Length: 430
Image (cartoon, rainbow, N blue to C red; front, side, top):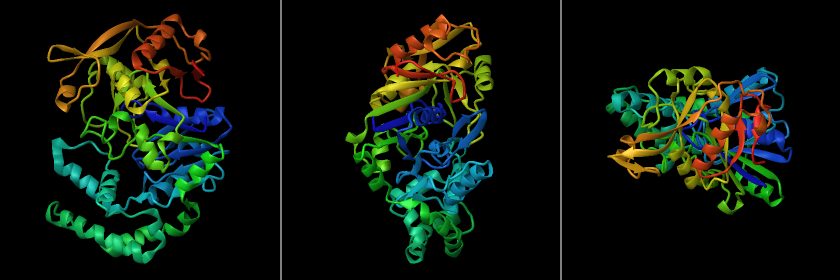
């Protein structure tokens, strides 16, 4: 299948990098790995030959020598973060990373004033803050929608770049000085900041929409890699506690400049339990010893943010919602091995709202805030499954747990992760 989408089916941090990396290494025909939304607020952890790598802005395919990595038009790019990440990989001996990277000329740029606005806004909101990473993602997307944004291609035309910076700062400086009592940002400082990246960036920049469509016409395989996740989608997530882009399957098309009829396979990556970073409702969240154990055993600290993740049991209502919103053809279940420490494992099968059972995602923010999980409990397996390589090798209780989740979640399971390594994956329906 030439066009495959891999995306998060919960609130992010599901292990999308592992699924993407596995596809790229299992199928040598994968020619492109593409990021279509978000910025360096996202993160993927990939373990290669026992060595851990973290990617943030770069697609996880950057570690696969045979594939081109593409940062498409829907991404917001911090040049500073991009080159810091590239240099980090080069220092660790990863070869040819700049030759394998292509950046869309139409991707929008995060400048230093976006980061400033992001941080001061969050502080200004106080207890009503959204819980952003403070890395300028939201303000950059806001400028894009307000038609005040700077695109990557603008870095190669100083006259246009200057005019765009002046237009953006005319409004931003009013906000900084009159509302937040901060110093105004100088146009020349931002111009100098961005122009320093132009020469190094230029060889990487292309019309990625044209490139990807031609690749699909030629029968090449393109893997579209999601950032964040379904429940953080600005339209379909737990608004307003969401990201500023569209990380669902539909967002892939606009974020990469390809039509929906080009997509053949949509894989939703989902943890065997649930985690969330930042503010917002979380029906299955645990505030007891079980939540602490999940955090500890799962290593639940954000790759890009360094923040501890909130933890809870598996939520099949959210899984069914993700399957519906994204048109999932299958799920990839991760971190099953983390649950090997429990005698019993609860799974949320529905919600109770105002005394009534609700089997699907509530329609309103108020309803979701008041949703109480209805649990069904499954027998634990109390053993280490990280060495299992086939479904039959799993303990019968683990097999039953996976089958139950599959039946509850609205799409078949393609694979199951039993550890962080590339080899620690069980193909269920491959």
